[in-house]
Image (tube, rainbow, N blue to C red):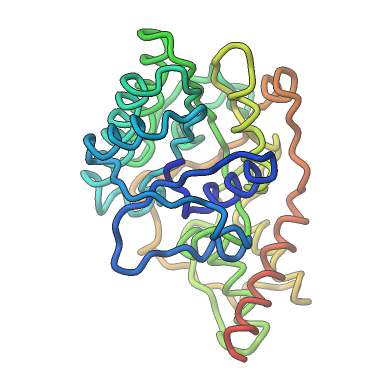
Length: 321
């Protein structure tokens, strides 16, 4: 598994360990490794950490040759959309070239392995069919991040069609959790709300409040990743709740968790946080995943917001003790 220290990597590791898998996680060499998500789930000692780099094809080749895995999950990415405008080259290298390096390593040294590629709803941009997006909706990426992931998406499909590899793409819509990075709007909101509740902050600064997203729980979505690799035939699937909510909706739900109904005095709109090209609305149509995989999301929008606010309150209170 690449991206094992991220939100999805942690939840997927927990899920696979629960099914009796041996989980090997690829991490880059860092002076201060960041395993807090694995530690928070209590699985740090159960995941076997291996050093490697998505941009070092030799390291990937050596690992795949030594491990001969049965399943490969590519979750590694520069995944923050905003950063992709400031670091478009790095974003493209990691997300696109890194995926190509991994596909080649699998083709050469673990050709029987089943491969999962983490694609993204950001690939759709502002493309809509009946106000929703599914597997056949036209793709029109609106950020360097989305463009890099679209290239990786098509590389995965090309390797499946060219070499007969069992390679799937999961087009996941926004999925959040208490393990989400603090730079993402959902955690920025829930962390800010928790700090306001505890008297540690007076406001939270955000960008576009009108953007609408299809938000689900990351812990639900990793099951869909696994289910894709258990099918007889490799295919691509949209994974989503089918509901979308605005950033304003998320703010309202989060502030209600701390007893505040009018959140407007506590929120500052910062023009510096607006994106050069905005994706206005995303709402996934996951009929294919529900029918063919038998997958359904279990955690609803309100329950997700409640989970995240409560987790940030606990986290901040524990840190202050």
